[in-house]
Amino acid sequence: MMDVKTAFLNGNLREEVYVSQSDGIVDQDNPNHVYKLKKALYGLKQALRVWYDMLSSFLISQDFSKGSVDPTLFIRRNGNDLLSVQIYVDDIIFAVSTPELCDLFANLMCLKFKMSMMGKISFFLGLQISQSPRGIFINQSKYVLESLKKYGFESCDPVDTPMVEKSKLDEDKEGKAIDPSHYRGMIGTLLYPVSRHDLQFAIYMCTRYQARPTEKHVYAVKRIFRYLRGTVSWGLWYPKDSSVALIAFADADHAGCQDTRRSTSGSLQFLGERLISWSSKWQKSAAISSTEAEYIALSGCCAQILWMQSQLTDYGLGFNKIPMYYDNKSDIALCCNNVQHSRSKHIDIRYHFIKEQVENGVIELYFVNTEYQLADLFTKALGRDRIESLINKMGMRSFTPETLKQLTDEVDE
Image (tube, rainbow, N blue to C red; front, side, top):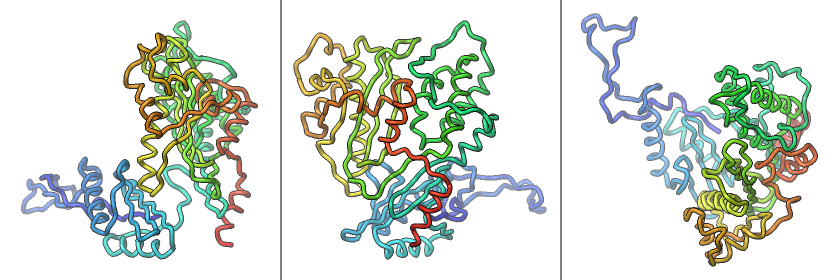
């Protein structure tokens, strides 16, 4: 990982931008004059774009190609060797297949910019990253502890589930309203631990009621904090020796919303045994049958798979006949059969594209028993045993600081 010093000063402004003279450095001969900027400064709305354009042009001139899906990804290939570069403002993460490419890229950037080399990535945007020959562990225990302290939950009694099993929230129109800004602040704090997919459904339920939260909703949010209190050290484990195969699971909870009777779509995608994407989303319209709700969920999962397929192509990984697992045989038959039925002819045409992907061999649908339906975690409130079983299959682990240190030390062995 590396950081560009005073990154924005590297870009030349195309627009005419003027700034007034600052106190203490006013030109006594021309006190009413202003400065014309030649370089982008931090705070200008153009600064980010100017810096990106400048860096992008430089990398492309050095035989890098821009990602077809992600414009912040740059790839350079030397035969079978690969150098991938990911840009986030002035922070640069890069991965190489050989040590020689690492030195090559570092020298290349240092010749052009003033760089700060930060070594192997261990912390990025709140993510704590521990690397070892056996795999990579990502968690956010530091942020979680700070969040618990911020809202006074550092000494609370923990609970073993983020929501009461089978519970559902509603608008609670007769309930006592509370300060919405405080409620929204708590929700925003919970949204940041992106490595904790076990919180996804509970947070998604609570976000619906930010306009007029009541004591009932606050209690639900507080329960999530109490769950976090007992699971601080949990995170995602990405084993090194896992296969590289793209697979997906999708599910739906028909008419689960107590206020609108809309359904919830849940999906997740793996690269081998590594969970790399997940979603819990409110469907945009009310489905009149479980078949329709689950068909919409399949379509949404398929769209995500197609996006990921394009993204992974930039890394030299090609996928076809991508398996998608579902627990409804009727919907699988519907996707594989072009004959219209009375129960499906009203479904919006935009959801039918999944049939094309099945016909073209991009997606293959497989039935899975509900017991093995991993997407259940993103569609309903589950009990402790079920949650523990699912998150274990998704690669979530709890490592103590001592274990993490051992993992990190293995790099130097």
